[in-house]
Image 1: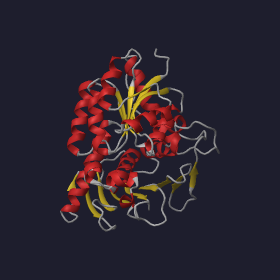
Image 2 (image 1 turned 60 degrees about the vertical axis):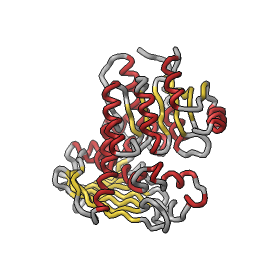
Image 3 (image 1 turned 135 degrees about the horizontal axis):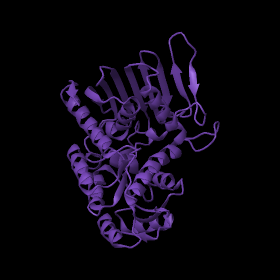
Image 4 (image 1 turned 30 degrees about the horizontal axis):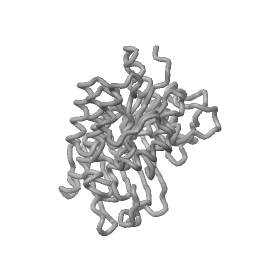
Length: 377
């Protein structure tokens, strides 16, 4: 049994980045991981300064060097965290996969669908763990909703409504040097999509994770509201699911007054479920001509999946970092399983989920370019 903490490295996520610190807190929350090495920026000076901020034992000026050196060290990293802009995801993944180092990557999985397909082959060839941080799957009540749907409590799913609304790109921040806006609105760094790639894929993943249903076809209308912006900042997508159910997915980064309003409603033949990310400790169960039931985390009536995702007693709020950490908990468990030659549980978004996310982006853009025609998924 491997009883020591796992050693992690990180690429990207240095000074000025939001997601790097989130990965750091989430990875280390359960005291299973210690981040010891990093290539936190393509700028050597910033990489060194960021490494000092994090008090890392080792820092590198390039991820290529990091992958090769860490593999040779007796106490090298067990897995790497990929927290770069989209255009670097595949090169970083390839560098570490070729060294048989396990990977936890930010989403979307890659810059293009072709790179996503290549990533799947890399992971399969090198037989390594690959987890994608669709962190909303880590919330206890998202897992409770999934368990309720699987158990048949709401009957056959007929309708799903997903919304992810923000307003932070309502202004042309990219023209003012805003780091996060700069790369997300740049086709050379973000890929073929901004809004769908950045937040729409979270909605797509949450829908398929919670319902257990795959998208079969879609019809997408993408809009760029801010003049001069190169990629879309708003999207409306009609969905057809594999059991005949219908869905809508709306994502927008120009919805005035909205902060991070991700929500999902699932309606079946016997009842409906409703969950909001900004009020994550409440799941509504609705039935015709009956009172609404409210589920909360930490309660004994929850499913084993939801209980496992809860860390603290009922009444104590659990939120974003804890949900993110649940993805890491699953990935870390499987890295240990590989070391101990035990079966994997894959209790986290996988490389296959990442491929579906990239296919979702591609199909949405393709549908839009064809004047919002229906496209097979």
